[in-house]
Amino acid sequence: MKNIVITGATSGIGLAVCETLLVAGHRVIGIGRSAESCDKAKIYLLSKKNNADITYFNADLMQMAEVRKVSSKIIEYIDSNWDGMLDVLINNAGCVRSRYCTTKEGYEQQFALNHLAPFLMTYSLIDSLIKAKGRVIVTSSESHKNMSMRWDDLMFTRFYKPLMAYKQSKLANMLFILGLNDRFSKKGIRAYCVDPGLVNTEIGLKQTFGIVSLVWSLRKKKGVTPDVPAKTYHFITSSETHPEGMYIHGEEKKEYSSYVNRENADRLWRISENLCGVEFGRLR
Image 1 (cartoon, rainbow, N blue to C red):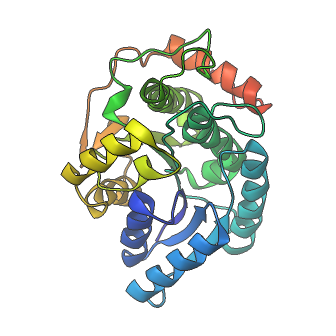
Image 2: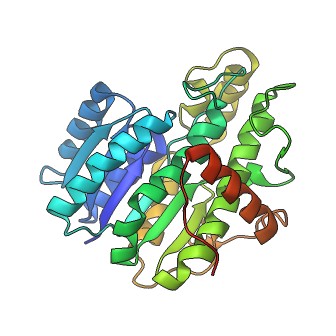
């Protein structure tokens, strides 16, 4: 039985992962954006397993202040109920946007939720992960390939292109996981990115419009149901030993972009520390 935290846990892939892990007997904390969505998800999960050990917290993880707030609540829960040990953190929450939008802190929303939130959430829970020699999983995508970081304008304040901003955030996920392994593997932590493939979810229809929502409404019909990629998260979570590789699809490691190297990972790590106002590990 593993202790697991998963973000974006009220719909789509996140909800399917929760169901899969709870049915397997694990204990789960889910994070959703609203109390209403959390309550609805919990009712659904308990209908699938009436004694499921599921707890929800709600937070808008697009806002770094809320990441800090909810992570404090999670730490308190872990310390009180799980002996301070977190076996797996699944950073799954993500978004797509049709136009340039910023958070309250002034960050482009896709970059904030898709990258900075996992970075800060992992930082906040790192002691609990170290205690359990745990695993960190981030939902990435094949779209990270054939992409580079827009170092001179990471927030795409000029000439905003929604798809490019999304692809950059998925590349940032890969760079973050490489940086995390570099800094914490000696402490027993292993980190992974999952390629879920094309999945029939509503991610491209939430707070989008125009061409973005039209393209996604057509494209998602070709995708698999969320329970299919949920098996990958279960594989990484439940394996007795750390699975090989860093980028996983199904139960197999995949090749990732050559742009995912230590120089770029370290550069993004330093920028992310500055944006989040933290010092998160130093290279050995």
